[in-house]
Image 1 (cartoon, one colour):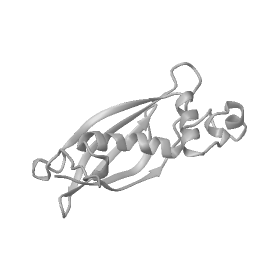
Image 2 (cartoon, rainbow, N blue to C red):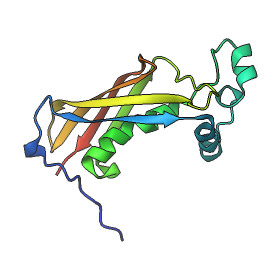
Image 3 (cartoon, helix red, strand yellow):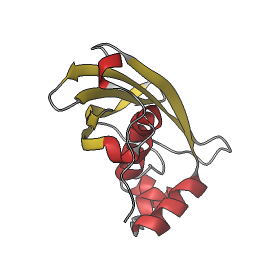
Image 4 (spheres, rainbow, N blue to C red):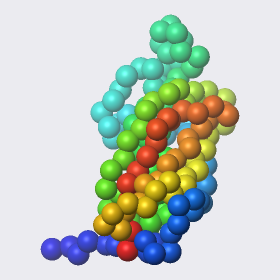
Length: 146
């Protein structure tokens, strides 16, 4: 049986307001195709520019769950243990538009400890933007620390 890992951040070392290291995540069309294969979500709005525009989108958009997964990486990198995440939820506010221009898009993520809770847990609030606009709202994780 595998022993559970433990977050490398100690609860006693964290204060409300502690900022997590910010990260940026580049997103290109190839990443969306790989994610579609892994997730089974082959909706053409995520890979077919013509279709995306026909349904009123500005271009191909990233999967919401892809965006959500990239954002939580800030927390899992900070704790050193993906298993430390006890809860995670977001509201999808805007799509991440991924043009086929050789550069794609960038998801920018910052995080801050918003509350110290019981049982060595903290609530981390994330700020997630792309092209200067918030793409995830109410992005919050509860994390168990050492």
